[in-house]
Every structure is written in C-alpha cells, then in structure tokens.
Image: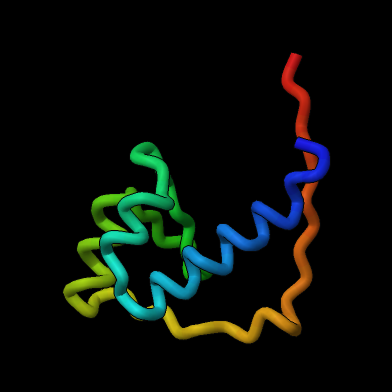
Amino acid sequence: MAGNGQTVIDLDKKRMQAMAAKDVATLESLIADDLVYTHSSARLDTKRSLIDNMTSGKTSTLASNRRTSRRRISATRWC
C-alpha cells in the first residue's frame, strides 16, 4: 500500500468526475461489484442502484472542488 496514495487519489478523482458526468462506462470499470456506497444522508446504494439512480436522475452528483478537499490514506492490517 505504501506509495500508492497518489494512485488512490487519482482514481477517486476519476470516479467523482465520472459520477458528475454520468459516465456509466467509466463507473462500471472503476466501481467494485460488491460496492456499498453510503451517501451523506446515510442512504445506502449498491453499485447497480448507484449507477441506475444516477442515470435516472434520482441521485445527482456535482463536481467538487478537490483543491479544498483533504485526503488521508491509511493502511489497515487485519490479523
């Protein structure tokens, strides 16, 4: 995991851009099939329901200003 921080940040940026653009093909390739997405409202979506709700207009994602976002990458070791 060490050294992969920028890759994770770049992929997250690509995901957010795809969500804002409703780019289903990119989301299909980036999002894991077993995704459980928790919205800030606490609503849960699977990969399928997230993409379906986004394309139908039920869920709207606006591009965010990543310059003001702070990210922290940490590794968790499970024993």
